[in-house]
Image (tube, rainbow, N blue to C red; front, side, top):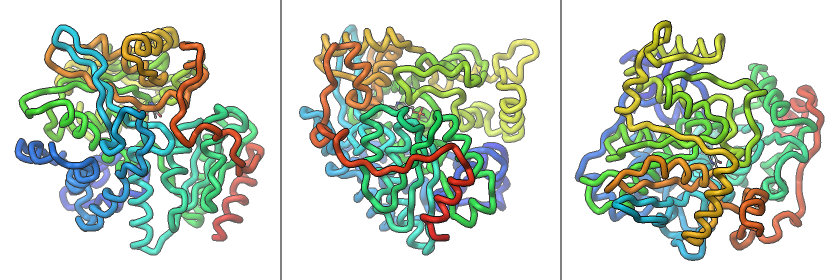
Length: 490
Ligand SMILES: *Cc1c(COP(=O)(O)O)cnc(C)c1O
């Protein structure tokens, strides 16, 4: 399996980039995102055979189609070690941890069916663990093979940073330097990250807001000499291995919700950077019988706008709202370029031009109207995509209603998904909503909706009172660099 950039790097047939070569990296050298040169296909026989597999076995079968340069025995060992009931143990008491991503039917009415697929049973109670845990083991494996080391440097306002730290803690050859805005994360999220005592995890609380943290990451990354000398890398959502790890649970959800490959299902995905639903798109391109892929956004509706109108318009900071589903608060969707590449039928020159235009003019228009940049919006439906939007009042109402009718508490992001999923139900096509976090992570809004605290999984009862390990620092790039150099010893 060979890879190319959405903007054309390595596109020619005599150039080759492998899975292992892009594993530790981010953007392609031309600023594009990596994709396989063609999507591997899944046959009817394979799908049938996969019905009886464990999650770890299924992950191996899907991944081996993409990571063709990792010896199969090694890949099998990595997936077996990653997808265990031990790691994904935070399933609700009535769900099976063995299933890793258990399904639960919420409602059956007039031939429609609404199903929840739990992706938040991992160590940080959010779906990012599904991919990040695999990434931790893949990174450790690849670094050991090359006797290399990697220093992950990033900024977080919550979910990504903690998922990365829990995936990389204690891993050989890896250190994590994670910036977060001092005193701006919830007590629960702060405790999750800062209570880690592993020597390779460095939490830096920056006196400022999230944007200050991100600016520091950019400044350090732009110093190419420092970056290369200190072996700095990232684990952001454009990482190809993260996307491909997420493809697995679409297969799992489909196979668990159906008994024959004649049947179709739809998925609704609470979306921000388009990483999660991009994996659904890839599963569909591989031949998984998916009817609709429903993009659910919150007030930050840049994706809903595109899927309704064909206009992609990134938001300015002042137009990016802080909401009660904060992990979907984005101004632009960093994985969206992967879908646009497929929508434009692999025309890398046009993809490059459109995303240059995003930088210079803040967006592009594929509506086909006079003066637009193309008319591909009319092809969006062929890819199964539809969308919808949910706001704070919808979240509260959905959390209350799901609790009253089905006796289950959902988190704010999942509530956005359920609200939008209901607008797209079709008879005889089960609608699977991806549950992206457990409610305990967003207790303030659960309080507001239900007047009581969210239930916490075992082991999280007193997390706020555990000893915390972190460094407070001013938003000073020089100090940051000195801190990194001192702790890497490079
Ligand atoms: C990251 C995240 C999302 C958004 O996922 P994308 O891949 O960025 O679209 C949704 N919900 C939760 C809880 C998340 O942590």
